[in-house]
Image 1 (cartoon, one colour):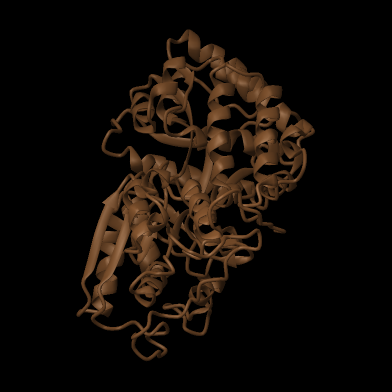
Image 2 (tube, rainbow, N blue to C red):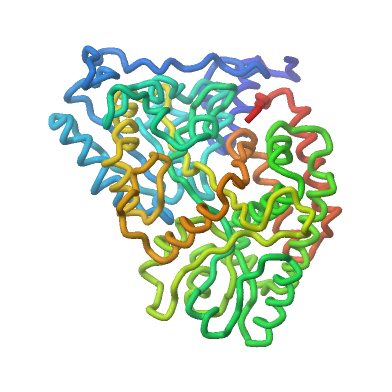
Length: 483
């Protein structure tokens, strides 16, 4: 690695601070996070062993949690709320360790709240790193700031100590949280993604959710004549809701290898035929949107949908719970898969994106990593997962944890869609955790495409240019996935 002025230590600080948005905090050498250089090989994996001074390990206490060690939990309070933590997981933890105090912090500004603490070294123990203001997990890992969670997934399950936790989770969960070949992220929520609508309104109007883009366009014309905005998303803070749709459609056209190639920064992936066709199809739908929605946040657009001012909205299975306090009796959430483009698509209409999401991380320099690991083990018990679903209205990655629970209309529609999809599942994406700069650019280009400022070809060319830039930047640790 070469350095244009300054010491390697100072350059690495600047690179790291730029990656996680801390440039405003730099005030010379003392303002850095770490002194180690982040090379393309990545930082050494942080040990998953419990904090120094912990208790002896046992079958009931596999991480050696010290009975009176305090635990600090920071939760992103978005669509899932935070009552699952305050009413379920944290009480379960204090029941197990009654001498331990749990400090709960809820925020919608994760990066803004925590970046200064990472800079100073005063980090919390457990973090829900989610929302539009999330921190760059790839950058954190490359600087040795994240704990390797292998020990968590290899630990005995609370429900069946004969089983490792990894064997109690839906397939792909552990892999979806890998960086540099090791699991640094616990993706806890099993989300289905598609187009959401008011089932009661569609029934009343005689509208059928579209199965093809031709049907989608025709339905938008009909809805527009009824005085309702046919389709919308929030451009101000939730452009990622829309870029998921573009990627889902591209994957349906070509197959899941396309999304793996996006993650792996394969040359020319953004300018492939499937990506261009998907971008063009969605740009055509964008013509039915109200341009003022680019300046709105997600809850504003969702409230308008609850008022039947918006017919179709792209989101995941947390939506119904997020809006429950604003949803009138006349509104009943339902979800339909992303429409097919042509009969020649590799994946059928029924295919939906179902992925382990909502990333939780443990800082490697936390004061109580053992407690954080045990907290995560509690989350991954059936009791912890069931309580999460009851409080958040979302399914978890714990197999069978929701069996027997009554499901709301929206969650039932997601469950039905998953059953109909069978093995036809659009795979997860990892670039969002690996390459924050690429993800930020994708939000920008998605808005430009959907609100009519650029063409599909320009969208693809711009994204390929950014992907090439990330690939050639030696300060960014490169990742690879094979499944």
